Amino acid sequence: MSSILVVDDKDSVRKMLSETLLAEGHEVETAKNGHTAIEKARQGRFDVVLTDLKMPEMDGLEVLARIKEADPLAAVIVMTAYGTIEDAVTAMKQGAYDFLTKPFDPARLTVLIDRVLQNRRLQAENELLREELAQRMGYNQIIGSAENMKEVERLVKKVAGSDTSVLFEGESGTGKELFAAAIHHLSPRRDKPYVTINCAAIPRELLENELFGSEAGAFTSSQARKLGKFEIADGGTVFLDEVGDMDMSLQAKLLRFLQQKTFERLGGTKTFTVDVRVIAATNADLKKACEEKRFREDLYYRLSVFPVRIPPLRERLDDIPKLVEHFVGTYSAELKKSKIKVAVEAMKLMERYNWPGNVRELENTIERAIILCEGKFITPEHLAIRLPTTEEIRLREGAGLREVGQHAQMVAEKAMIQRVLEQTRGNKRKCAQVLKIDYTTLFEKMKKYGIDYHQ
Image (cartoon, rainbow, N blue to C red; front, side, top):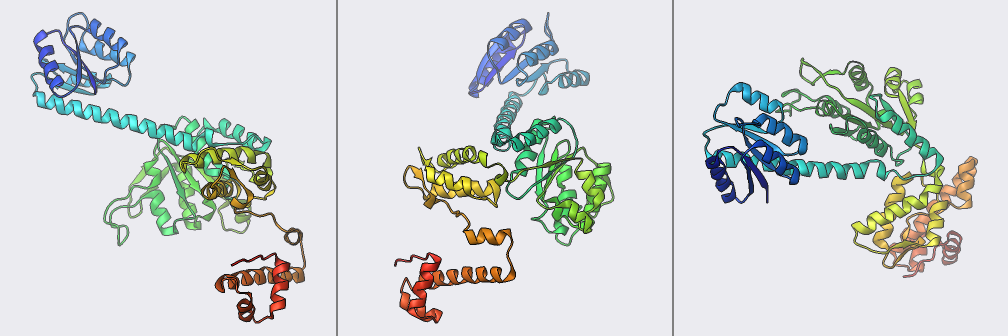
């Protein structure tokens, strides 16, 4: 139930407004002068304050200023029988929600009160969403005590307060987007839009439309004006993920925007100016791409004013237990499974694994393990990972064409045997017939490849 404070020096007005608002289901308190109103505002919180403008000792504008000082979120509506445009402008400049001229229709007042309360609900919901977003994308989600991660955090905190362009470099799954969001939420732009766009996921012709917008008729299928991401994010931050995949011709337009902060919508001639901070990320070697003429060198230097490299998970293995604990807690709660722990053997396996997919792969592995786990412990069987064999390690370290061919043949044979065994439901004689080998050879290969199939 909403609470409303009515401030007027006339008893009849206070009574009329109080009865009207009580009939609408609101809680109402009254004050016959500004001093009483201020005292009540300090003692309790009101959603709406209705105050007369012309009152002895303290007028409505002073009441407005003092109420806003006590509670900046209170919506103040100023009423007067002597309304002028100047009074309205002054009241609105000082923070009034609206201005009513007496006499007014009570129905108009109730509609206005409903609008105020709806706006307050939306503000509260937006604040909750902002806090939730900050929790999901902010610094409390960045887990790591390894020295190389501490250095990244130090750099992020240092650059957050400026408008400098930042380029995050690192493998897929290292959390570049998390650090980009952290910079926005730590910056003076935190209350403005934060817009992300994946340059690798959108075709070139559509990406230009997404970034800069278009006028109606710019395309055969475009029936209305479309605002681009830079225009939407005015005052805030745009995160360009996988910027290395951007088309060369579009890179030129992006470079001009970064230099001048201006652009034209597709199909339009009007030039727009916006204030946007750009943060970019890539898993590609942009210096090499510049040498190969696949990425503009001038754009690279414009984006990488402040480059930050995010280390892969294999370079911060000491952080794995903390990350595992975090993801186990997150997905246990999400999947409504309580008291799940990680067995020692499973943790050792994860600490020895190379994690080519980095933190994202670790998160997906834990989510899958939580789903599969029916007891209280996650075991190695629940993890969709395995350590490489000695032969695979040797091949990675450098091997000749013959060794590579032999290894590929072994991998293909093992996969083929497993597939045919599935098709024949474990019937080894049928499997040998399909593979066109004798029964003994099948057994030898199953033993060699560690295939233990039971129907």
